[in-house]
Each structure stands twice: as C-alpha cells, then as structure tokens.
Length: 413
Ligand code: HEM
Image (spheres, rainbow, N blue to C red):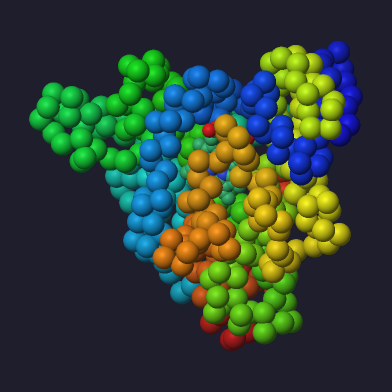
C-alpha cells in the first residue's frame, strides 16, 4: 500500500495486494469515486449510488439477472445473434474483431437495457454502437487522454441524439405497457424483462426523473457492451498468441469450450476492463494492512497489480496460463468483476460460472466464451497484413482495431 497527496486535494492511498483490494471492496465507508468526472453519463446510475439508494435500485434490477434468463440467452438468443453478425465477415474471409464483437454484443445489451430495435438494420446497430462507445468514453473520463471540454460536448450531443432516436420511443412504449397493467387490463407477465421497464414500473417508488432513467439505460449499454467487446478482443489476442505454432493447443481449444472459458477467465484476470477501482472515504476506516483512510481520502485499488499478486497467483502470476489453478475462495478472474455492493450484475451472464464450481447441468459458459468459440469455430486468426491497433484515447489498454482472417481466407493465401 502506498499513499501520497494530489496537489492541495486529499490523500491518495493506493492498494496493490489481492487481499487489500478484496477488503476495500467490502468497506461500507468507501464510496464509489471512479466516475466523479463522468457525471454526464454516470450521475445517479446504479454504479454511482451508495447506501440505501443503491440497495433499493440494485434489489429491483437484480431480478432481471437470474440464472434462468442467462440460460435462455445462452441457448436461444446468443448463438443466432453471433452467427448473424459473423456470417458476412466469414463469407468475405476477413473482418475486424473489435467491430464484429461490438455488433454482436450490442443486440444483447440493448435488449437487457430496454432499448427497442425497430429497424433491425446494420445501420441501426452501428448507430447504437457509436452511442455506447461515446457513453463509455464519457463514463471513463478519468482515464481519457483527450481534451475534457471537447469530450464533454461530444457526450452531451450523443446523449441528446440517443434520446431522440432510441430512448423516447422505447420509453413511450414501456409507459403504455405499464399503464395498461396498472389499469388492470393487461397481464404483468407480458411486460418486457429489461432495465427500462423495471424503472418505469417503479418510477414513483424510486423517485426517478426521466434524465436519470436515460442515464441508467445509457450506462447499461456502455457497461455491458464495452467490457464484453473489449474482453473478447483481449481473450482472442491471448489465445492467438498461445496457439501460435502449436496446432495441438489449437485443436484442444476447438474441442473444448471449457478450456476456452478458462482462457477467457485468465484474460479477464490479466486485462481487467478498468485497470483500477476508486473509492472516497466517507468516514475514517481501517484498511487491511492497518493503514487508516481518513474521511475525504481517495482509495485507489490497483486491479492490474492485485490480479497479479504472487502471494495469491504464484510466482508466475503475470504469465498467461489457461490451466492455472487458483486457491479456494479466489475467482479465476481475480477482481475483474469487482466485489461487495457494486459487484458486477452481469458477471454470470458474461463470465458464466467457474468450471470447477458447478455441476454439468448448471454450467454456463458466458457470453464472452460463446463469442470466442464462434470466432475459433470459423478458424479466426490475426490478419498477417494488418496488425492490431491500440486505442490512443484512453489510458485503458484497449484495441481500436483488430483485423482477423477466417479459415477459408487463410488456406488460400
Ligand atoms: C467482461 C465483461 C464485464 C466486466 C469485466 C465487468 C466489470 C465490472 C466491474 C469491475 C464492476 C464494478 C466496478 C466497481 O466496483 O467500481 C461492474 C459493475 C457493474 N456491471 Fe459489469 N462488467 C462486465 C459486463 C457487464 C454486463 C454484460 C453488464 C450488463 C448487461 C454489466 C453491468 C454492470 C452493472 C449494472 C454494474 C454496477 C453494479 C452496482 O453498482 O451495483 N457488466 N462491472
């Protein structure tokens, strides 16, 4: 643990150990602080609420994230959605992993958020995607390397355009459906199972202004879309490097979705969607190694370091190893889905359940693994003529482009 001061501001305490981060996630006196600069997208969103306000919203939204729903997504919705997105690129023999990944997850995320897709066209998916990317940039302004006022203007203009094209029609439809149920003329079981419907149905109880509902839905779009698509790109990048020159490994992966899932979990550990979590101390609290955070102190949880803590993951903690075994009580993805009150609501949907912890009948592979399996099944590999490009606009390690070729195209080279 290190501490220091930022200008005349409060003290900054940085935690780098696995157990230190685990403890900090559970401290009730530590309040979310990563989105202090991302208020245009994040103000009053679930991830930015604290205490009772957070508890009551989370209780409601949790109802949507049930095992049965995930099973339905995994067996019925995802396979079709992924193939529909991949088919044209596979036909061409090449595509871009980043945009294909985003397109595939956007349909799923829009459905969970409660944004209607009335046209079902690629143009519509890309428009939604562009909004989600901009909202992601706005939410993570703390890590942006761009001019803040320019970025803020872009985010505000994206929010206004998103409102007009997607949010208002989706909101109007849900208000009408909920009103019909409240009048007693319609069956509540027929309501869409999504975040926006849940908010509309509880608007009085939660005292939610429309702009908060809009931001919550925008937050879901970017939280679900961005982390899923980025994890997919990192996962396939790691897999491509791991199988390079090793056909035995490629064959093993192709035959074993559980090994792909282990690979995805190992990627999640080494490439957390956010390199850090931040909390502000609301009152003095003692952190795991005895250091006291005073009210107002900023606590930075260094997830990159904690997820590579040799005390927990061994002396080869920084090495990518899909066969890694982790100690009991430690998730294979380390702290990459968070913990405590803000633990990721989409963790099981995206990560499935750990291969060692569930009976076969209850196994969920998770969205990222299913996406990775689909790319591998089509023989995807890096495009030898066009190397991947990293994003220059954020301190987060993301790819902005990752050209891939599919099996047919590779064998005819
Ligand atoms: C690989 C994919 C994902 C990763 C790595 C990820 C990571 C995280 C992390 C680290 C947090 C906690 C942040 C903190 O404590 O400051 C979080 C919270 C959250 N995530 Fe995810 N996430 C992923 C996918 C998703 C998906 C698919 C959804 C929804 C469709 C989602 C919705 C949320 C929500 C709503 C929260 C806030 C929970 C709360 O404050 O109670 N995430 N996620």
